[in-house]
Image (cartoon, rainbow, N blue to C red; front, side):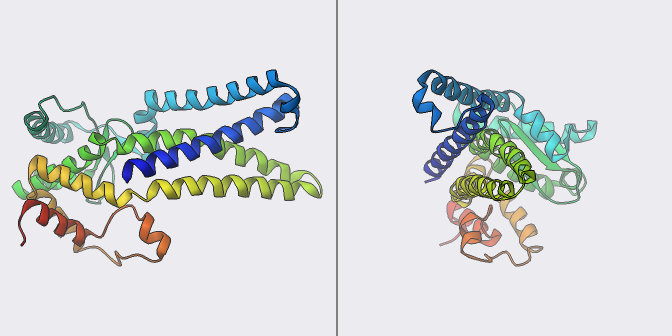
Length: 287
């Protein structure tokens, strides 16, 4: 289900982005898209080749510089000396258990720190994991239980990287850039008297709803991916750390339920209590 949703959404987004890029390049060529092409197959081929090259270049750039770009975008920084020591300890634990379980070295991880006071972590791009500053501080200062929770959460984020969940998000974001830029360009058509605002509104609305349809399908598997990453972490380092973390998070959760049908299916994370229950079942801690 997860792979199907991701591939379907990515395919849709590529098709929409390709058509929008073709539309923009057609105007740059000075022709009427979808009409003049039929009379000029050479121009048709050039336009499609240029459009495909744009999307391939964006995907290649995301694969090359995605970790650095996303770190800047989220405000993640490199760890300090004492933070690096904590992260090295976590990496050593995860690396040893990963090698024992899979018979191969753990993929190299780029560790980052988020300067906020939350108890949070996230995986992104191809090999990056960012952990909040206060979560690291608690692991240093509050003893074994806090460190165990952090190891469990880090293993969960490693699960996202292991299953390539963040890879699909990275490529999806990259091929969506033409849609973002096209909307900005088409908004400028609103300055044309009389007909300009109508054309601008119609084009921007079509692009927006086409783009959101892709993201909607993409998000349908969010909950499944979270459960899968939880199971990965529990099998790698044991369930105790994640369960302790869930107890902490659940105590601060406010209105964790759905606020509508769309929200129910697209919410990024399942309710914390249900995640804890699944970990208990996975570990055989409940009947």
